[in-house]
Image (cartoon, rainbow, N blue to C red; front, side, top):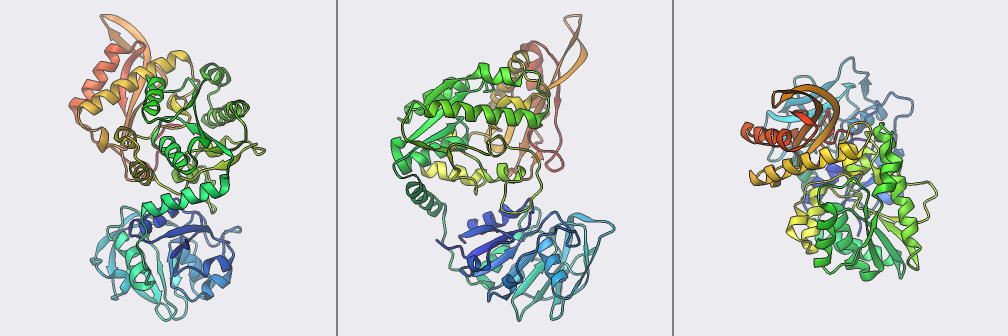
Length: 508
């Protein structure tokens, strides 16, 4: 199936949001690297140039083939995409002495198809450093903000629209409407794409690629890997071998719950208790990137051993999602690395398996939709995200059995109380973090010198941005009291009120 809209990725952390918003509007959209062969773009009815972290003045700034701009299709440039076009075609971009970040009011100066249904003076989200001083020939200004006199410009004859702000992010009030207008009013797409199309397409792709070979599938019991198992099972049946590895970094009772759940679904899993080997390799390791690498490497070593038990095992499948990929800088463009995901960051260069990651173009909410359609039990579809490296990245510093026990019990209390209060399904994630910080306390008239536990709870739509949850004080008080009273080794509980950005959701 050919995409109707193609997004050229120049490295923005929000690139996938563009494609996601388009797909939500029924427009099949794919992301290609900025330097893709022009021939591959000829099927599109419209092209979008994404934002990016670089300046057009930097030595290695990403620049596509100029043939892209000769294609007879509408173009929408966003942020870096706008500045790039202006820079290449006769305008003037100045190196910014100061950036513009955050909300701004958009003042519409000309009625356009792009702004149909968009209220004047609505909020848009800015995130740029350079500034446009002069427009290219034939371009006119169609909208401004107080700090950006050229917030939106266009060349109607060539059907090119350029935006300084980001319509794809949640904070741009009418951003989705602008993208919808570009697709349907400007590009005249047919639409009609659904998540069912994704499922049928992936099943067909998997069957063609795998043939009669077997696939080892990394199963953690989280939403991503559980959906992946169901998708692979739908595609190749018992030729998929779900491998559930107990790495000693699981939540309380996770091992039993996962094994029982898949038994009820009639799917056999290969269980490996490797908790000792993981904890042995993690001993003395404090750096979070090293922890992730070690965990990824150890997973692969175990998969090699499991593969020896079966015949014709050629493939390894992982439930990697797009946020994992983009934060690890393993994307279709020059995005900056935030942190290494254990799936995409811990793989050896000489991997003996062929890798299958059918979910890596999706966000969490889209994966949940896939799981629901495939018949995954509701309690699994609604589970909050749990990182592949497990509790290792929720323990700051070295991982030990003592710290794991404290964290598991604290996390279990947080989860149970949040569920009782009816907040679990409203939150993106809620969990405990162990701090290797000891403070003085008093319990039973005696001095204590024990550890600190952090409560982390956030609200989000896609995991790319998140805000700390404003949980009731009564709930936080109950959680804190229970942890201090019931978990040995803890005398202080704090609440994390950081948003993403600047913080990440997980602490490591």
